[in-house]
Amino acid sequence: MALLFGPPGVGKGTQADIITQKYSFIKCSTGDMLRDEIAKKTESGAKVEQYLKQGVLVPDDHIFTIIEDFLKKNKNRDLLFDGFPRNYNQATVFGNLLHALDLKLQVAIEMHLSKDTIVMRLAHRRYCTKCGRIYNLKTNPPVHNDICDKCHLPLEQRTDDNEEVIRKRLKVYETETRPLVDYYRSKGIYHQVDAQGTQTEVLERIARIIDDHIAEK
Ligand code: AMP
Image 1 (cartoon, helix red, strand yellow):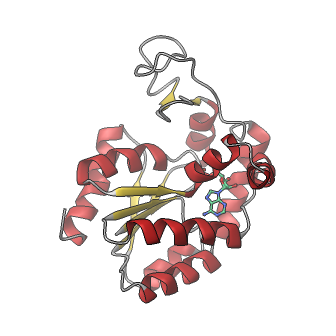
Image 2 (image 1 turned 180 degrees about the horizontal axis):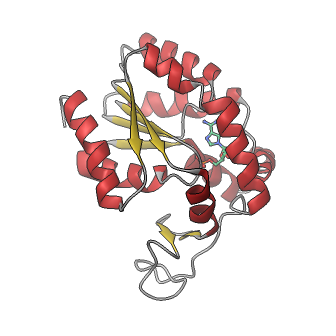
Image 3 (image 1 turned 90 degrees about the horizontal axis):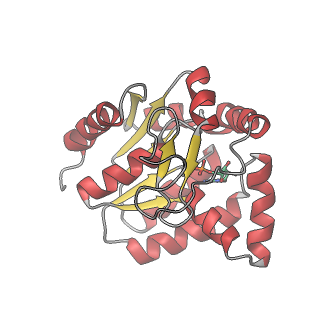
């Protein structure tokens, strides 16, 4: 079991998709799950939307409900967490939950990138609302302008990918999520990868860690 964390725009979602395919992991992206909830237009989805719009974290209790449900369904699979946990409380509760289920987190990988590159990446990020594939108009564009290569539908920009919200999300990362570096370092499972470079280069760096620390692939 592995988890990927890092600031918004570092390429977590893209790498998580490639890694889950390469290793037949099951991905748990709390961000994707929350966006699915919003798309269903339920009452709870409307509440969740307010947090995402502001670039702040959704309350932990809501996230725990999602995670517990996910773990119950996928307990016996190899799992990759993308964007969870996001703060110290989530990390410790997650640790207790895994312990109770006799599961073990083997690696916590932080993806690192300079702030300028992050802002550039997020401003040019687009995604397909149907298949979820992520593009970057500068570094990883679709074949035809603004159209998904697979679904042939127009690409969209996430509502939280505007400059004001991007800055807020970066701040939230610094204050709430970065402390996980020390937390996972103290557990002896922390690794940092440089997220600069091509998708393949970054993948190779992450894959090396997974190959070295997760026995069953
Ligand atoms: P992401 O797609 O991972 O960048 O997440 C987008 C947004 O969803 C974040 O800015 C938060 O508002 C919310 N979110 C995602 N995962 C979590 C989490 N584990 N805890 C709290 N909020 C989350």
